[in-house]
Image (cartoon, rainbow, N blue to C red; front, top):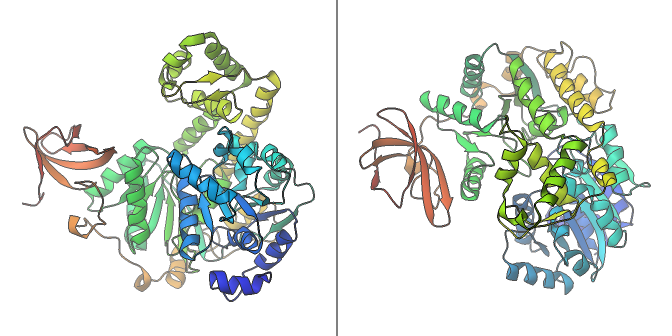
Length: 565
């Protein structure tokens, strides 16, 4: 089958292409390179999946998250399409079996993370098969000027060359003109066609609320989720503040779902499934949540703290209203929150001297290199600010550059000292300045009296947005827009405390929000659940004195209780 339209109907069940999909697919199928900048939810994945299935060779898809690639592979396989993924969460036998399937020609779409190319022998194994297309998803991660730079993405130009320079398609929802040019240069796509469909989402209303205190921020979030109904997302930059917001909402009778990177893998998976299944609830999340989450009916997205860049902000609000119905997006802005993102920016940009000191220290350890862990390294270099992330940034850069193999404190580690030119390439002098300028532009968005959509369009290099969009708080009263696009009758009220019997089942004996009675301690509210193999531990708030404690449920006497009895 060579006709894209016939393949679209037969393989995916769609009668028509959307926007420029057909043009992109025909261009890529003919061997052309392409950079695709398309809003979240507009069908970027089809632009490489369909060409892959039209060719008698492998399409290699680079994706940033294991959960994201697992979801995409599962969706393809449900349609009977030959796709698989190889990643670190599989055991050796599973990885080898899937690689053999690729080499035998049984796979058309192979998904991997960029870190996979650091695994010895993997790239050599891929060179034994024909790679017809390299697809780089979330391609803004390639760019040092993007909002989510991943050093391993930066090496994909070298990977492409070692695979014989197959045609390449790079895809992202958010990229400024500078980021677009950086992607094209890094992936050696000098002759690529750029397909940019714009960033306009007419069904999203944009607003900013200026708060004077934490209490006002909480009250604003409470008022919005009460008035708007669910499902919705509330984003926070700091996990500690996320849990504080969770506690405040629970005291007001709500039962939010929570998601962040420090939850166990079991909890993250369970909470994501709960949110995808809900028609009315709210999830409190860090930016660890959302990439690849395909939920079309999200009615609101609130930012409890300011994001670091407009790219990150626009990508996150782009998860709302994919069903085409009205969705409300508001930044709850507190001036002092800017310092949080200023710190994150500093931590993401250690200078070349700091990285050089890290390298010299590790090299000087000799055989003792395998006796320290990352905590010990932080203790050595971060005397005052233990939460400073510069050490972690340096370790990520060294791993991505092939200078460290293994995890400090967990694996047998070897070290290669990078050359000065490598350090300069990883940490260019102007990256910190550019990142701080990105934060400044996010602050200016929060403060501007102008049309917010016009401001965003100009930032992304467009001048086609009228001065009055009719879908932001600078152009129209929010209540008037809501009455038209999201009237009260269309809103699903967010539930108050949900009975344990009504929650999605998990494979732990208790869940967040349950009450247990611990012998010798009394009633406790379960705030977090952690799964360690077959062991389960819980963080609880003790009712008698509101203290927080952690219990291993296998080592204490406990039972579930009804707090109302």
